[in-house]
Image (cartoon, rainbow, N blue to C red):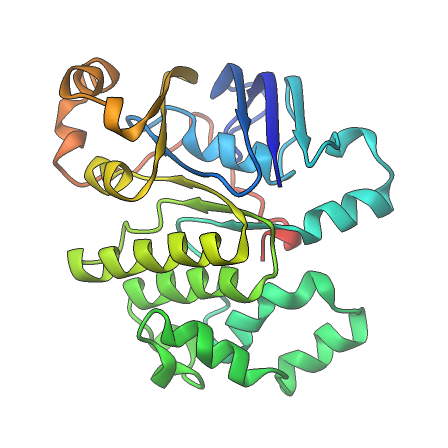
Length: 276
C-alpha cells in the first residue's frame, strides 16, 4: 500500500484538544512495499505520525491518502475495508492480562471476522497453528497457551508483534518495537519484521529509538524533530553530523535508553479496535 501525506498536522493521541500540535506541516510519499524507519528525539511526533497513518487520528490540517484513498472522505464501509488492510503495533500492546497468548495473537485477525466468529474465537481459538507459527518467529511458540499476565514485558511486546504476522495487512505501522528487548531479541525482531514485510510485499513504517538499528535494517530513514520532518534520506546518507543536528540538546538519546514521554494535558490514549 502506498502512502501520501500532504502538509499534515495532528495532536498526540493521548493529548487533550487544547494541547499544542505534535506534528505539523509533514509531507511525504512512501511507495507500496517500501520499508521506512522514523527516528528523532522524544516528543518529535513519531507516534502521532503512525496514528495518522493508521486512521486512528484525523488530521488537524492537511491530508492523508492510503492506497489512493483519503480515509476521511470515504463511506463507513470503505473505511472499514481500508482499516482491514492496516496494522498498528503500539509500543505497549493492549493485551488483556487474563487472555491466553493464542487468543491475543489471533486478535490480529479480528477485523476480518464477523461478530459471531470474533466472539467464538475468545473461547475456542481457531487457527492455533497460525498463531504458533507467528510466535515461533519470535521464539515464543512454547507460550501459546500461557496467560498474558504471566509473560515478561519483552515477551508481551513480541506477542504484540506476532499479531502483525497474522494480520494480513498491507501496511504495517510499528511503534518502538524494541523498547523492552535485549540486543539479541531486538536483532531477531528486526530481521523478522523486515523479512516478513518483504516476503508479503507489505509497506513497513517503523519508529525506532535505536538509531543504529534504523540505519542497519532500513534503506530509508525519516528524521522528525519538534513535529516537523527534518530529513528524508537513504540510510547511507544519514551521517553523524546529520544525527547531531537532529538530536541537538538530546544527544543522550543517541546512546541511552528512551525516556518516557508524557503528552501535555495527557488523557488515556484511545486504542482503536482496527489497530488489533
